[in-house]
Every structure is written in structure tokens, then in C-alpha cells.
Image (tube, rainbow, N blue to C red; front, side, top):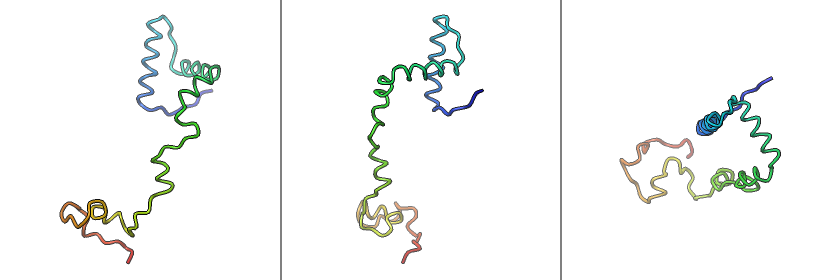
Length: 105
């Protein structure tokens, strides 16, 4: 029984490159078999795998922290007045949505 998994395009290309290098050494194996062996290798050498995934263990990316806990700029509607808030003053034609009004009053 088989299932499908999603890989980034770069990862798929690297997997295919690995398959080609194995062929040069006389080993013909389909991609699914190479993935199965890589999984076995990861289970057998868990410490090596953890070192490759080190940036994920117990540490959250800084940008995700901003999404979950945004900073308060003290501006009621920064989405409409972003140029004014960031750069100061009214920038006229630079802001293409300057005539849009917020539903908030």
C-alpha cells in the first residue's frame, strides 16, 4: 500500500539528484525506495537527524512570534495610513489607496 507526500520542488530535485548519483554507482532504485531507506536511516541515526532539525526544536521563528503577539503602534487603522505612520506626514500620490475610508469611525 502506498500514499503520497508533499515535497518542495527543491527537495524533489535533490532526491532525483541522489537517485542519479546512486545509478552512477550501479544502484537502480525508485524514489519511494530511496525515501524508505532515508527514513530507516533517520530512525537508526536519530541524533544526526535531530542536529539537522536543530533550528526547529524548542525555538519559534521570530516572525511567527510577531503574528501571534503583534506590536501595538498606537494607530487605530494602520492598514490604510501605513505610509503616514511609517514615514510621517501625508505622501499624497505615493499611497494608491488614499481615498479608501475605514468602516471604523
